[in-house]
Image (cartoon, rainbow, N blue to C red; front, side):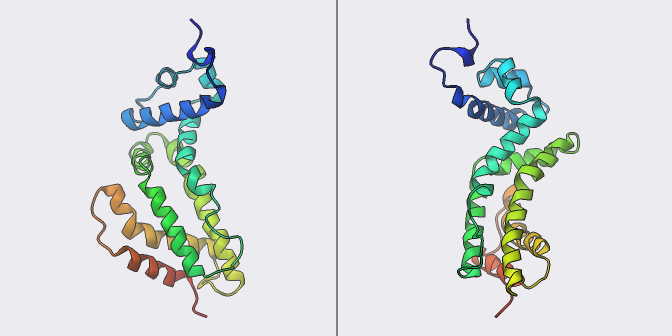
Amino acid sequence: MAPADARPGRDRRTTVPRIRAAARRLFLERGYEGTSMDAVAAAAPVSKRTLYQHFPGKAELFAAVIDDAWSHFTRAPILPGDTAGDPRAVLRAYVGRLTEHWERPDVVPLLRLVIAEAPRFPELSQAYFAVGKEPALKGLGAYFATLAAEGRLATSDPQLAAAQFLGAIKEPLFWPRVLGVPVAFDVSAAVERAIDGVLKDR
């Protein structure tokens, strides 16, 4: 019998998405250590040769899963390239998109997986940072740099301001989700306080 991915009628353009979907499911069910490349190939289903043609190893496959989970957020034009418009409205909309990202069913479970297994597999946290957190932080920092150039940012360091803004949002609103405890703060109040901390009154 021909390998599953070589059967007539199989659309090869769907191969990588199928592999990523199978890997994500297995990573979340079995953990990183408990997921083998053979198991992913069987679940996709693709031949092992095809799997390794697209992903040389499990670390690269996990990075692809993380990239897939973050892609709708990091690749979308969620911030303007200039300072046109009200920065407060821009940042409120940004937090709204960020919240939608948190609510995706795989985002928090994948982060929990990274936290649990990164001490033994540091490549997990490296992948999570490289394809998720770092692009998001740089994107926000670039927007803050445009505000700083016009004297509208409360600090001269846009990247630090981006990190502090995200911290002021995530500490009260995101980390309770990760820990599985109720959010204890008013969302709107937390967002406005975070915005107050980075914008300069004109």
